Image (cartoon, rainbow, N blue to C red; front, side, top):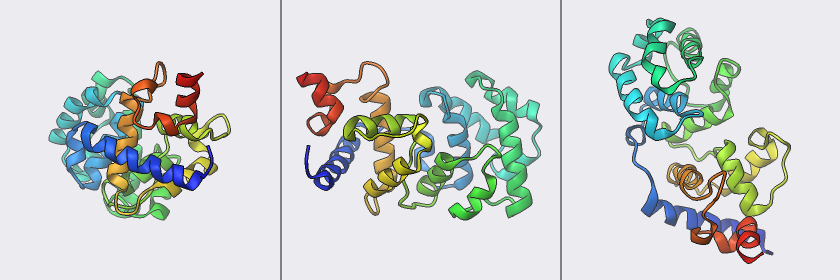
Length: 222
């Protein structure tokens, strides 16, 4: 399909349109509190969002801010997040929070330069960008395995094996982000990957972008 710029613009328009009618509703989508967003992003990693909601609410009830969480033991944190599995996240919480207290006086940074000081402590590109987008309203891209899957299917992008860490894909994703609408666009991408462009048996026939998607047209049209 020719005219890549036009197709990219059309993709963004359609994703936003789809999101207007299909976005899921979670409590962390109703806050701009950086701490609350950070907690949600830690909990939803490799976990279905619907499972996270009751744990998220209990977590914030016990530790409503980063100072209170800094006083929690690893065992206390693990006991709250146990229903989600992946108990190693308790140690990750402790490490990131300790670094935020040490480096930023208990503040969640509002810029990528400072957030990168937490890389290797349990924070990476995706979580840093999610905090910037959902807490601070920045026009930044998100790329995880699900968003990688969508962009590679639609645009036939070639990346290295761990494409969600490929700088080229991050740059491509960044060029798609609509100015002033990054939050809704990124939510739309996340939910589109969960509900339509799924890893197995994607709903190509009912897909809102099927006619401009390389994978969809090949699947439906043969």
